[in-house]
Length: 402
Image: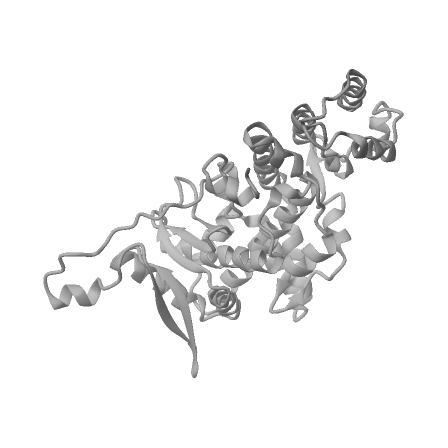
């Protein structure tokens, strides 16, 4: 019996989506990183040994001076002398800024290891929560990797703050809300870091970010000009700017749909029955995710993550959640109705009014929840024809009403 989602992933049955760059989201789910482990051998002379003394695939401790009297020690998984040198230079550049130093100090404190490697064709980098490892794609330029290191570092911090990896045990709306907040915060942190680095005379990372994510960089610059020293307001407004790119947001939503679809279709029935049974606390998410140096810059009220501007679904994505509902019921006799609470928008981005859903059905949500509670808890108990017909009618009525 599979005891947890993480254990199921480790068996290789389902690829878990890892939070990361936009390019990762657009390619749906990525596989857990498998390190190419090799042993350095046959070193023929002292000069070579001096430049290639780390065993490839094994961790070692690197250090960098952050400020006089302040040295940062962090863990690197060696990818060879050349790649290790590139990574160490990225860290050295990062700690010259306030944001970069803050993020990497926390990354080191959390024991997260960093490595250069193969992160996929379009992926600049990603954080693997199951292995507590940040991987930067060696195929990309240092200019792109520079801010990506901070972005993925923030994902590492978020993961440790939340202390919860098994997303499938939370319902669809909860996971969507949490994933969005994590990416919005990581983009804000990456932008602030790049701006600080530019202020120190190195604009390469900012230019890369500005080209790919102008709505976020423009929001940051505008808020720096208008909010001045109110750093919390600058960070909050920049974080919220991420939600305005519905294409980016939709790509993340698609990964959540695929995540649940894979589990529903492939996971053991006992695991499918347990999935989507918990709800993320929005106050906790905003406090622990939208946080810089121990301060919740976006406040502590999770309602900010559940507004029409932050808690919406495009109509075609919503339709996919209805398919998930039917798929889950067909397998284990229960449903995840959390997507019903989200705002649905059409292709033009207009939020559809509740009156458009007048055909949903006469059965109230409290009645639906009550019905779910009396659904048999194991597959050993056969569903009666009446129960099956009743639930099918619920799902069909909602689908037709949309």
